[in-house]
Length: 175
Image 1 (spheres, rainbow, N blue to C red):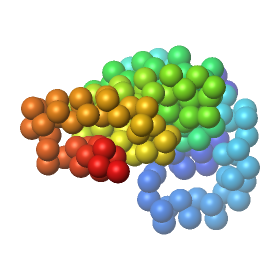
Image 2: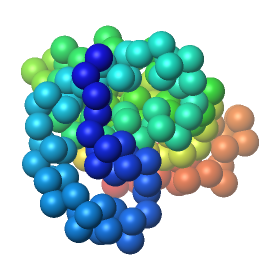
Image 3: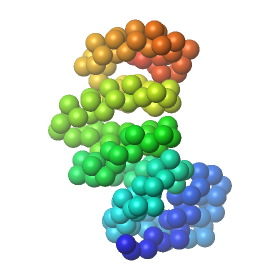
Image 4: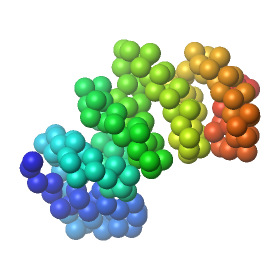
């Protein structure tokens, strides 16, 4: 596997805005490297590596998925699907987002709707709340109205009424 430039490793390893600004100054080539198709291929290979597969719940894995989602394509989906079963809600969220981005403009709307339904059923509210956001962005409220109603009833039975996901789904249904 080809080496990942140090600037990219540092960029993916921080979520701090000040540090990101410092990195852009320290590595003037960083914006170009971030857009380089060869770097993307290397990052996808890294995502598929035994080291990352052995630790799917790491912050690094979530950061890698977050970065790669930007230009996600349906062809890359099989590489990401295994991360939907990670223990970490953040890794699952980033994997779902990658797949949603990959299928957002896709001709196969059924795949996008299936992903959104799966996100709504995630055990973590952070993922469910983001699912409701993506339902709205995709303009899928009408298509999923029956699913959303059933979800809200099931969520109430589970005691999720005080969660962000429940609130967002309720707002979608009340429009």
